[in-house]
Length: 332
Image 1 (cartoon, rainbow, N blue to C red):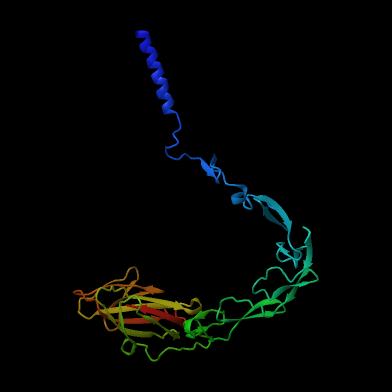
Image 2 (image 1 turned 180 degrees about the vertical axis):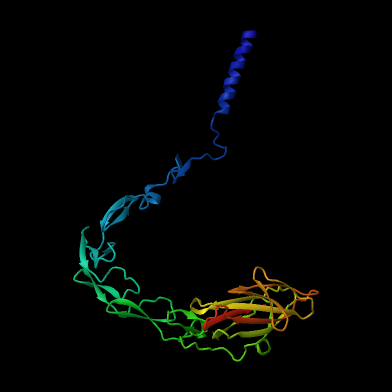
């Protein structure tokens, strides 16, 4: 009986295995695809016409185009006269002859032009020829030059002295072709500034200036002779939350020598000045200040929280030069 029980066990296991591995037609769909109305199943591979043509067709070559017939790749000739891509700028272009061949024809296709070289390319009988072009004017982006073409050569002629230039036309051309805020001073040592202001009492009043970063301006003038001195003054206003950094910069024309001095007096008293490396000095009326050949930036400290102060500026020629044209930039 023990042997019969073992045989039954084998038969039951075999039947169970048959059930486990038998496809159940009522179960979930498999990954196979049903083809049309036949009900047959095949792998889900797209037909040739869906994706393979024309996307997977070989490149057809010049003057040919791909065709698709029933999903099969084919090749046909392009119509006669179709322009085919060719070398740009060679005064020719390629066209199709309608039979799969190329023909080269003359074309108005000159090489690329170089802007501002006073020349241009033209096509003559299939060849590129250089012609002079006075309208192809070079632009050097300088307001103080006239840009022209002279016999095919780009030319930049400096405009007359004091010609208006710069943003808004409020600056002046110099004979070196530069555009500057101040007029050019010649050997005649012209002084375009306000006179007289040769002592502290007659200092030119520049008004009221706050310590906002965008405030401040410049003046243009000339030291005429070794004994000439120019004085300026303004009221410096320390606005709330702003920072006082009174900087004065002296820009000499043609690198000529000059010196700038700054003197300060706090409106609220207690004037304290740090010259930051410049030379300490005292004004004729007793105010403390600092002097330097180019830039003076004294650190000012007044009593209380308000550093508003009266400011005097002096420009003089320490090297006893006869003529020192300058531009003085200032802010508080």
